[in-house]
View 1 (cartoon, helix red, strand yellow):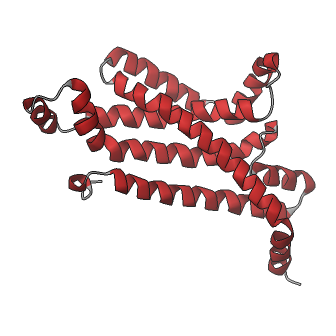
View 2 (view 1 turned 45 degrees about the vertical axis):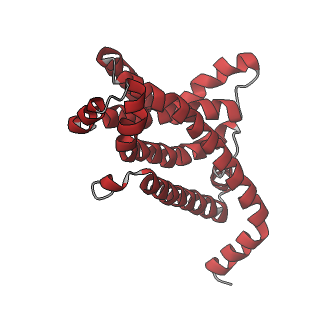
View 3 (view 1 turned 60 degrees about the horizontal axis):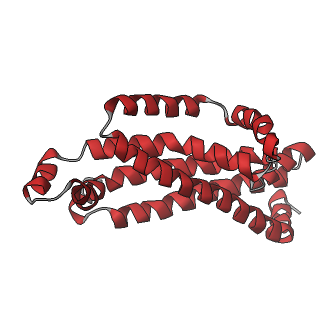
Length: 222
């Protein structure tokens, strides 16, 4: 029996486990991204009205991105142990939310700031109030760039979520970690391919959502 045939047999036997770990991974990343969007998009919009705060927040988010994920997990373990949440879902969730902030905030801020001044002036000329202009003109025109930031955050967090297995957060990283510990190439290959496919599928789906949300007049430029 060839290596490939043995691997296929391994997949057949362990399919329920692969599905369960995939669901765990999607749940962790999906919830973290949802919360990150609820924080990052409004914050990015607000920062367009405060340049000093924008510089500070973006620098802080950039610094956060430079911290290795395993180091961040290590810092949070003793802090969250105070409330008995030092390992598992909670520290992984917090880390993913923090890592998502830079692409989401930066892209939202940049997109709103770079809306065509002529379009903004036209909206003002039509008598739109600030809130009306934001939701009817600025956000729709900025949506392609905002969605690009969200896509970046999702793909990045799918990868970072693998490392979260080291602190008991579950997900597809469990297969890779166990494969390394056991020197089991089937576990390592299966986990790696599953994570890669998940990232590709997520990016393609979000690309479709981005296209759907992009105003018709901007499709040729996005």
